[in-house]
Length: 234
Image (tube, rainbow, N blue to C red; front, side, top):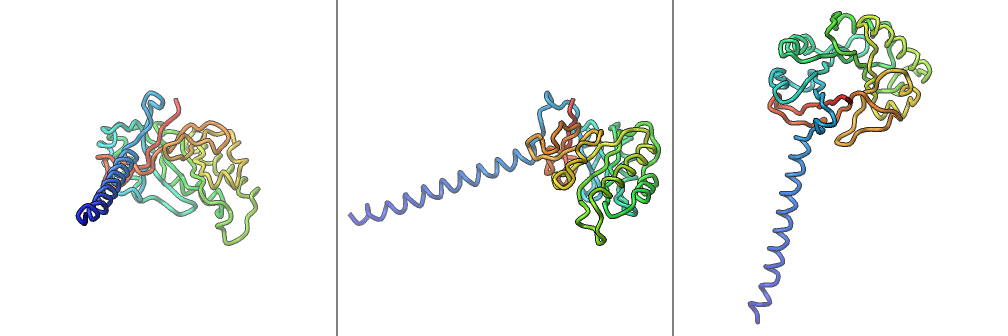
């Protein structure tokens, strides 16, 4: 009688341990699937990545081998910020046979002319460049001096016009959810949109995207660090 009484807790513990093991294995598999997931090629034939200094060293030849057709290179930020990896990545992308474009991060606190001058200094005139992208992340709430929403949007239009004059192509608005919520009218500017949404195609801009950052944690042989994987709408 005593032995039977003691066996029940042991079986209960074993069952609990088994369930815990299943949960751990299931979670590990789900994570593995997530960090290796990219959208189906049948839906998005053209796929690539956005890279910059913060992504560590990336072998762009290997990036093409794992399926990248294009790459967007972080180039400049505001009036003085410059990605130190841009020139290296620019040369490597051309050597690897990847299509390539440049990204400027908009600073709502800085006059557009100074930002455009920074971009022009970093990014050469190149007929092979993809349309430039302007990343919209921070709103005017980060500025030390109060700036109206209307002023931010006016400076953005000036910046777009000057960058487009340099590159000869309409820019893409790389619009974050936070910026879209703060400045919903920006999404209505007649430019293609680049949106972000892990796993799920984003719709927060109210109209279709041209580019979609689909996985910001992609693991590949091209880099020891995670990649920001981007796909283009056909």
